[in-house]
Length: 279
Image 1 (cartoon, rainbow, N blue to C red):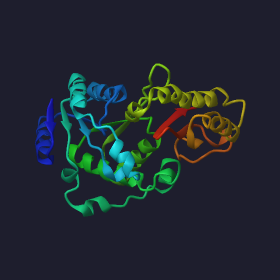
Image 2: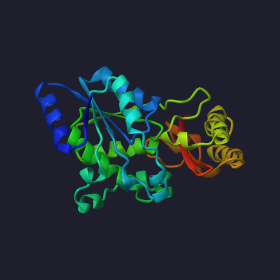
Image 3: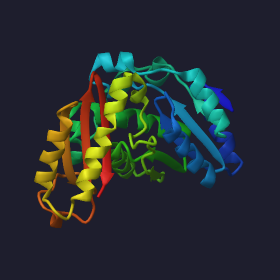
């Protein structure tokens, strides 16, 4: 597996692959890899000739400096995991390599109502930072297909909108959330949980499953309230919202959507977790 820290070296690899008629699958990550990331690599390998992953903790998408500082950085173990998974190349740039010109970090994207709800409301500027780095990575890797997990459900919608806005031909593939045996969604942030917090964290996914189980019994608002009440015993809840999976707008009755999804964000200790479940 090749490891590239400079854009010029990555460009040479990509250009050679393209010249050889290879298709490229791309898995962008911020590192601290787990089985969910490796599932994306496996999916990319199934349908693309070459698989490129990136590991870059993007400062522009963190509105909390402390969260950026504490984000786990585990490149050496990440590299081994990617190589074992059959990844062909990993791009591991420094911040100055990605943003040599400060003006490049000032681009503004407009995703309308997709970015003003849930994560967008809780983390101002987050999705603009995501869009800036993903656009730069797409331009560098020139993938035929890019793979993202559905755990970041709103982010996936933003990436699809970005591709549409930029008239890109990249196919965006969303894969189902990979979970631990007890149901907790796999996340790089899980490793920051204490033993007790990890035991309690599973209640987030349990609350979402209760909503799914009672979908045909109670209206969305009642289920949201029940979930918040359940989680508030151990979590500091930011939101639990039942939305239309296409528009991301909150629904008040089941007739408003043929694709309802419940999304949630909550702190346990000082660790912020998100999860969602298609209903």
